[in-house]
Amino acid sequence: MANYYHYGSGATHHHKEINIRINGNVTTQSVSELVRILSEDAVDTDYEDVTHPPIVDELAPLFFGNRMEAERFLKMVDGVRPTEVTQMVNDLLRKEKLLRSCCGTRLWSILHDNGLYNPSVQNWRRQVNT
Image (tube, rainbow, N blue to C red; front, side):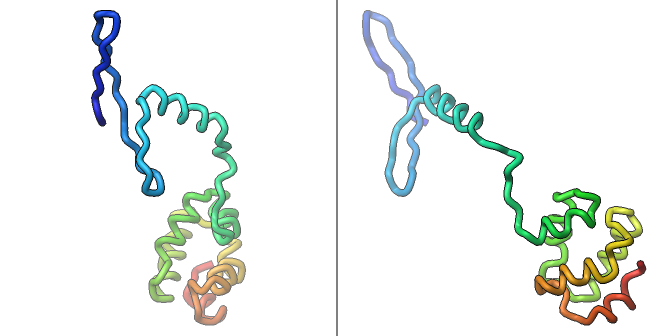
């Protein structure tokens, strides 16, 4: 943040300005102007219209509609072994964070179709306690 002093009418005025680099270009804005711009942008933003990967939309109903829980689950299962995936599912079932009625073919299908669980549905059913 840069401080600039302006003199006029015998009084000293102190303004705080900030340098912003956008796409390699530097611009200087006063802090108050940035606050005004950001406030206008915040009013124009629809926070309910946040886009999620399609798999989150598929998984959320299985997590009682909780998108954050579905996203957390995706992060946990990404890149782990199939037995770890089924252990996590069983743990979530014990904690009642996952709908038991959807853990048969439906959850397997979502994970399988998205490359997160490759073994067969029969293997899934043997390992998941539905």
